[in-house]
Amino acid sequence: MKINDDFFSSLNSQFEALGLSKKALSNEHYKNKISSLEGNDKAIEREQQFIRGKIDTLNKEIAQYENNMSFFGKGKGTEPLKKQVEQQIEKAKREIEDLKEKLQFLRKA
Image (cartoon, rainbow, N blue to C red):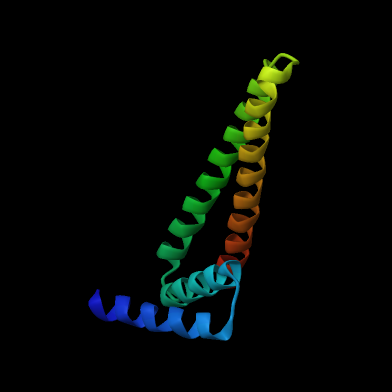
């Protein structure tokens, strides 16, 4: 475990030295994780199921947020709350896109 942690720490410092964005850095981390799973079909399938489950959960959260927004009345008092819920929806949608990208990486493995 310590060797693995040291390896990823070293890898992170090299990626940061290259000036990669956080998203690109995250993608590279995930690609490295996938490469460690190559040849282990069960582990890849479990990872795919985990990601699909997370996407499903996020889609349900978005539906719940949108449903809750329909109960907000119109007025100054509800605008900050409505804006906060809209931000949560956008955050969930971005996370879904990231997860879909990870699924694409897994399919290539």
